[in-house]
Length: 159
Image 1 (cartoon, rainbow, N blue to C red):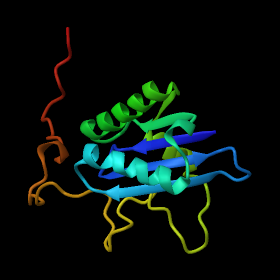
Image 2: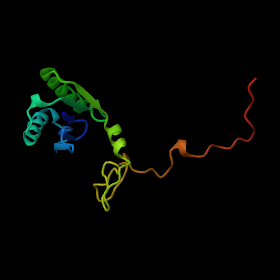
Image 3: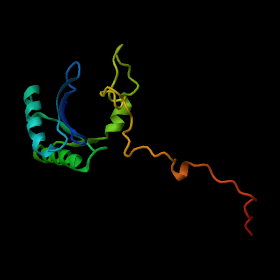
Image 4: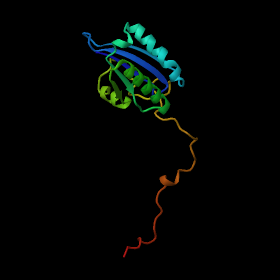
């Protein structure tokens, strides 16, 4: 079974042809980190991936597309292209969720000395950080983090 998978949810525009009919699953993939412009780049990326895999679009048995999380516009581009191919070829479309796919492979061991960037946000940077601060740190804590004030007498009971 040949599957054409598209992922346009994030900055990277990705396309892969998966061949499940071979003795070992074969994957031919192309990725281009572009940030914006998925609609302009995706069709060329699909053509390059299909050429590299040596497969025609009519030979694809199923289309798969990422439905998030990610930018709405990017997801919309991927879904529209997958739907167009499905209508043109009469083949089914499957949607996949990026986090669910990552969670299924999270427990798999990596080779010694290797790490998975998928499970370590910020691992590609020299100083890994999980979250980027949005504003400079304030010298005073926000009101919800300060301690509750002491009451001089117990609160009044409801009647």
